[in-house]
Structure formats: structure tokens, C-alpha cells
Length: 323
Image (cartoon, rainbow, N blue to C red; front, side, top):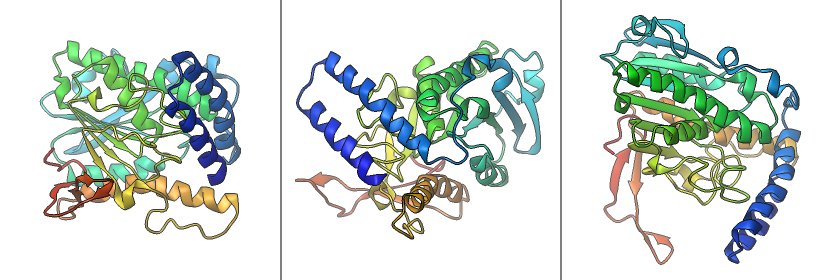
């Protein structure tokens, strides 16, 4: 799998560097997306859905559950909910977590939620459940599900703003394709959302094998502040693109991350190890929520292609960053 992905990236990256015209880039995008998406689908167990997308209804297939961290009690909130001001404290900030592709057991939330509720006080905390749309094949999820979910979240936030909730107090935490959904949501509310934390945002079909452009993927302009954590670059995560206002790259952002080394030569073993590196961004973000556990990053300039870390500027990964 690694060799196939690397070959596609190298081949299509070569074509892009050759200065191909827009129509050729579009053709390359179309021709490359299908094989790469099918390759990703092939190693998922159980296999992703391929039919039934049009039968889903966003209003019932996308669900949002919110609570106040001071008194945890999750309640479902709907777009246009007349009781929203009883479910959300409008005097407090609002954080919405967004899971990734095929996260059927919501493993992101099981790791993030208890720690967030423990250490982050005086805020509203919500989890977005878009699993019915996340169960489809990768290409369907990337090209149809992600924009649709972003549109739904935009509608919710737009309604909040009409009730005078300040959108600069909204933070989106998105893992994998959830990071791309956060970015797409931000584009629909240009410059209004306060913060996006993208945890190893999905790279396939967004940044590789060809970069689809900042208007169709996560970008630094999608919120007033965008922090991106990269842990599986050029594979499950973003490739060459470093498009946050602040970018954290543990182990330079590459697989394998600590404890995620491949334990065999088979493709199955590689897939498990790669998923481990992909999830490592969530592990780091969750660990950083404890104020007593700072995770520092060094800002090291590049001189003639070499990173120079002499008296580097430092900042904390996660919500306590000085920005």
C-alpha cells in the first residue's frame, strides 16, 4: 500500500510540477481519485457502503449533542431549535468536535470528551455525529459527505449568529476528514469562526495525489486561527501542504509516530500502524488539554533546506497556544 501511494504521489506530483494546464490538472484529478479511493476502501473492515447515499436525510442522519462543561448533560440540538438557548449558555464559548471517516465507534470522542470535560471549564461542548454519511466509500465521503455535513454545520452556526451568539467564540476540533469538514464550514462563514484545531486532517483526495486547492480543502483563512497537527503526512494525512496559521509536526509529521512502528511486512500490518500514526494527533491533542502537561513545539527556520533550531521560538500545542 505504501509503495502504491508513493508511486501515485510521485507520478502526479511530477505532472503538476511540469506546469500542466488547468484542464489537464482536472483530468489528472479525475483519473487519480478513483484508484486511490478504491485502494483506501480495500483495507477497511467492514467494507464501506457504496449505495444508498441519496436515501439519507441530513436533518435526521446528522446529529449534534451539546452540554455545558460545568454540568455535563448532553442534549440533542437541531438546526433552528427553538430551545437552543436553554441547551447552550450564550455567555460561554462553544466547542464542536467532528469525528472522521468510518469512525463507527466514535473512538475520537471516547478519547477526547472525558478529558475535555475534566480540564476545560466554563464552555459549551458539542459532538457532531455524522456516521451515516461517514460509512460510505472514501471518494463518496470526501466529495459528497464532507461538503454536505459542512453545509449542515454552517446552518446551525448561522442560526446561532442570528440569535447574537458571537461566532468568534466558536472552536471546531476536527480529526481526519472531520478536519476537512471544519475547514469547509469555515469557508461558508469566511473569517467569522474563531478557531479550528485540525488533527491530522485527511490528505488523500485533498492534498494528494494532487492538491485540489485551498478553496476546496482546509486552509489557514478558514478561521481567525487555524492550528494543524500533522502525524501521517503524504499517507492518511496532508502531504506537502502546511496550511495552518500554526503547524505542529511531531516527528516531522511523518509515519511512524512513537509506538506506531510496523510489526510485520504485510499490508494489513502497515495499515494498522498507519492508522496508529493518524490517531496520534488525537492522542497529542487530548494529552495537551491537561494544563500541567504542556506539549511544546519549536519554530525553527529553514536555511538552505536545513532546519536551524538556535534559540527557537516555542509555543504549546493545543488550546493553550499563545498563537
